[in-house]
Image (tube, rainbow, N blue to C red):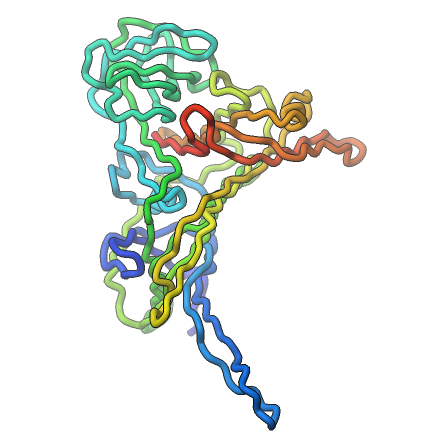
Amino acid sequence: MSASASSVKLAIATEAAFGVAEATGYELLRITSESLGLDVGNVQSAEIDATRQPSGNARTSLSASGGISTELSLVAPAVIGNGTTVNGFDKLVEGSMHSTWSTIVAGSPEDIDITNFSAGTFDLEDTSTNSAFANVVVGQWIELTGFTTNVGAIYARVLTKTDSDNVSCEGVTFDGTAVQNETGDFGITLAGSHITLGNADKSYSIEREYDDLSPKEYSIYTGMRVNRWSHGLTPQAIFTQDFDFFGKLQATTQVASQHVATTLAKWSTPRLNAVDNFKMKMLGAFTAESSDRILEISWTLDNRLRTEPELGVLGSTDIGLSTPTLEGQIRIYMDDGVLIGLAEAGTLSKLAYRIESGNNVQIHTFPSVLFGRPDAPASGNDQGVIVTLPFFAEPDATNNLAFTVDRF
């Protein structure tokens, strides 16, 4: 019997040391396809042979690479916990950002006042001085629930932090309406965990299991670092994400796997789609929801990793970090020329959106984007005009942040 792709399993674990296969801590990855493989470099000898026969080849390099394609789903930080995950995706977000999720903002309900609201900005004060904002960092979104006047969740992005009891924010309510001043409200619950681009050396061991073979075959990929992370949010579709890797080596064996992998059932963390799970979009400012009618948001974070070969070493000694690029595009229905005008003038803008599934939420934030060539053609009769705007993320002038992900 030959192996079927429908029976392949992938499991992933964070490596304690680059290129050293982990024996425990694996989580099953839910995938739609994968292309992991061994890269072999061969060079033909240049030795002259009068008989005109080739002089043979030499193996000159070994490494691993490939990609994993998935449908996007979310797990609550309270389920994930600090430093561990159960769906693998948040682990790969750490690898893509080469950083670590911040300590989860959670705890006993607090006494929070909302004051000084003006044009979408406002202050939050823990009036019971319980250090409600101790684990909050500037640039992070936090979710607040339990207010009386501001019914439902508030999503507040921290602009400044005076101390553990006082922060200044911008943001909106869950349905895009303005936040209102509210004092003397008790029992407020905070949530949030934050990540941004960093320079941590994150690498993974990935195991492919051919589950339907007897005996089973296993391919272990070591030293796998995320080179590119891509998102595709398109209409009439399930949201997708892709992770592409550079790695050290591949080894295939029939030895029974010692990697006991865990996962959540797929029905407990359903796939996100364009109808039910895209909730809040902000273009130009983070103080109100945009009225733009968005068809698509797609982007790719390219870490531009580089292999580091060494004489006498099998595979790469290391895979070095480089300055990343973050590019994407947004497509909207043509209602006005505001965004086109920003592209024409070379004016920086902002982009953020919220995706959610039940109580599980993420906000993806680009604090400073430059739009490229605007494309808004009349493609033919009886169809709408669609504006396509490529964008390029760069660090904002205030906090030096180019891209953040927040989860609740």
